[in-house]
Each structure stands twice: as C-alpha cells, then as structure tokens.
Image 1 (cartoon, one colour):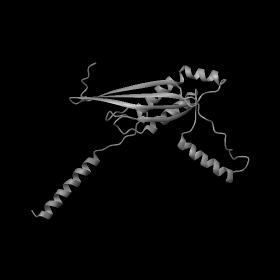
Image 2 (cartoon, helix red, strand yellow):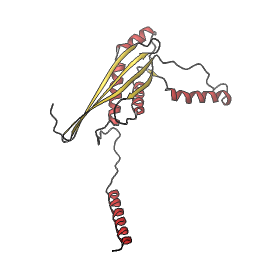
Image 3 (tube, rainbow, N blue to C red):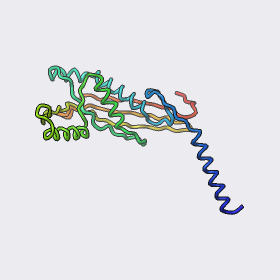
Image 4 (cartoon, rainbow, N blue to C red):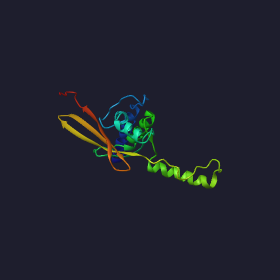
Length: 203
C-alpha cells in the first residue's frame, strides 16, 4: 500500500469516527428549574438557591425595621455591589448578583438601585433627552435615588478528594454596609455541599 493511500485511509477513518461521535449526541430542552448536575461544579441552580436563601435572610433581619423606624416609613434602598469569586472555578458572578437583585425586587421589602454600569447607560439616555426629547417628557438631572446600603461579599470553596470520590463545599458570605457611616448592619452566609463520585459517602 502506497504512503498516499495509507494517509487517505487514515484520514477517512478519522472522519468516520468524528461523524459517529456527532451522530450519537442528542440535545433536549428541559425546564430551566430542573436540577441537573453534570460535573459537580457550581451551576445555575446553586446561584438561584443561594440568592433565594440570602435575600430571605436579609429581608427578615431586624435592620429593616430599624431603618423604617429611623426614616419614617421609607423602605431601605440597596445596591448590590461586588461579590468576589475566591474559588478555583470560573464562576460568572454576574449571574449570582442578577439573581440577588431580582429576588430583592420581588420581595417588596427593599428598593434596588442600578449598578454603576447600568447608571452610565441611563445617564447617557438622560443627557440625550435634554437635546432631543420634548420639554414635557424629558427627565431632569439630580433626581437619582441614592442607596442607603451596599451588599458586598465573597464566594469560597473547599474541595476534598479521595479514591475517586470528591466533596465540594461552597460558602457564600455577604454583608450590608451603611453607605453613610460604613457600619455593617447585617451579615449572613449560605453553604452548599456536593458529593461526587461512586456514591460511597459516610457521615
């Protein structure tokens, strides 16, 4: 068999393998709320659960009643700041902060102001309205709501591996800071633990 023919046979075999692999792959649409863990890494369900647990803790804290009493009935205004990823995984933290913001807003217990990036877009629109919108509809400067508190925090993880088994532990620590005096008015955390492997786990 010539060298050229041999190379052609090898190339054809490689194409057949690739096509066989592609033909065996299937894609199915599932409910976004369905819990699916493939790798055991942080995923969308973890983000949603952590956001729900944190906001539930925050909005049931006594700090809200203290604020309402001090500000004569006004709901506290919160801005969701940076929650840092201190794990070794690549985790899109924007998903977590968006989940927290949405859960905050839907709780009806606090008001949420836009992030710095979002405010830049809003201010650009407001600036253009000064030139192009009618006087009756254009929005004026100096009417933005200042946040009373900023939510900050970080996500850490611990991974334990042994004989093909793995346990991943995630801890999310967050706290609310009074923007006027830097006092931490609330602090909380959530914990997530995942067992991955052969299933032979003993407490």
